Image (tube, rainbow, N blue to C red; front, side, top):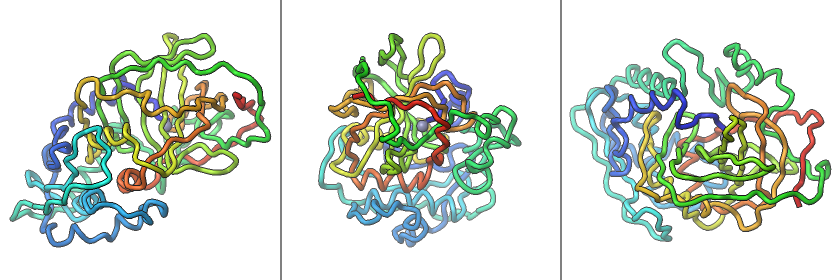
Amino acid sequence: MTAQSPSSPFVAATLRFGLCAGMALAGILLLGCAGGVSAQDHGATARKAPAAEKSVAPAAAASKTSPTSKAVGEQVREALDSGIVAKKRVTLTVEAKKAGAVAAEHAPAAPITVAPGAIPNPAASRQYIRAKAAAMAGHGAGEVHWSYEGEGGPETWGQLKPEFNVCAIGKRQSPINIDEPATLRGPAEPIQFEYAASSASVVNNGHTIQVDLGGDNSITVRGTNFRLLQFHFHHPSEERVNHRSFAMVVHLVHRSSEGKLAVVAVLLEPGPANALINKVWTYMPLDSGDRVGMPPDMLDMRELLPKDQRYYQFMGSLTTPPCTEGVLWMVLKQPVAISREQLRLFGQLFPNNARPVQPVNGRAIRDAQ
Ligand SMILES: [Zn+2]
């Protein structure tokens, strides 16, 4: 999970970069709107699949998807990789389906258009993108930033700054592998979900796609009410059950009036398209740092929950720096479906944004029957 909430400092950064928001919906990504970018002669090359294909999860790669969704990630990657300069426009093809409708067929892909005369400037482009991603991750210029691989990867988080120390030395870190034979089985109270149709906005914070929720959504468990702040995605799932990982996971981050955190994890596995995720993907900002508002009351989180709401429960931590402990985790046992095409789209933007599993260190894991 990530700890960012609508009240966190990163929202201020979001707003600074928010001018681009909304363009993704129209299928037009103004990569240069905050001072950056354009692409040179992408019309001829953007249909090829080179770099993006390598990073697609095997399951997703095996599926048959529309040229439109396949092209989006490629277009973004290629635009970023090949050099982008100020005030030039790259038009991306995005399915213009009615939000909320999950159709088996796809609108024909429109051709990619690129403003003529763009001047390539790869160094400036990459610098701009990195700075923007760092700003969105809550770090100013010159500060450390973390990632999921290479420099700044999970093994280094604890050393990146003193506040991240618990990532390295904590004894109740998340995620974990849930080893069923070692769980404490028995009756447990059901989680009371009190969710309703809500307004929301979708953020690409450079680490994941996060949806910040307005409205009145909460859960009650252990006699405490926790308000739903946001939810976000990891690909593949961070948590494992009997050493098995899942295609993705949704973390629903709740906070009590006393500041305690409770996260409900909903595992995702390939199957029919997911209606709620279709809404989120429709408004997904493709550019790191952007935020897109959804129409009022569009999201009803009850749509995401599985019928069987039994769960595993344990104490753990944030799964992103600063890895703060004392988080109540509830992993719903029954996965819900996401289509391979929906998986592929996220996987192209975030090939791997899962922290490796951490030692259980004798923690009690309740298997709520
Ligand atoms: Zn998470």
